[in-house]
Length: 216
Image (cartoon, rainbow, N blue to C red; front, side):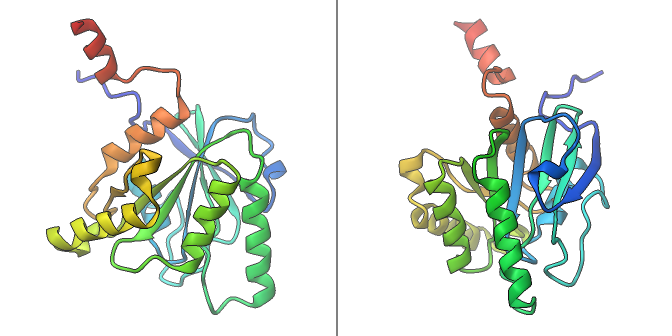
């Protein structure tokens, strides 16, 4: 029987939704959060990562994720689905509440290890995307840009989107690079899972590192 890599997800369950971090009454565990504009494909990517079609709710109408949604992964970590931003049809007061909720979750969260910033590979980076990244920078929150819907682009178009994103956020200086994904085609799934695992378990060695040390 083939041994699964440590980052593979074998158990995923919805735990709770809320507007505050304190609404998570279960034991605190390391967390990775997923943030992005409404309709960026956040729920679809989460479902692809856990290989479950309906764990995270997907909708044709953008702006439906309006709470912090906690999913316990392998009984060891939380994936947190943050409210989508940038949905123009939402009332102004509601959009302001979403902003307060996001800031309340992200700022000073000792359990948060990484924020996955989702960007539609077909679209230009927006002011709201920039504001989120600037906020994460200012508050020393690690982040990783991840391009969604990459199967909709040609190879050359995708290469250009990756370069554009890396340049826009000065990612070479940060020592990180965008990950291209497709929930529909499962593209980038294993690479992203490994990065998330390493963020959640910074002191553990990956199988590649163990093999390299054994060869030395």
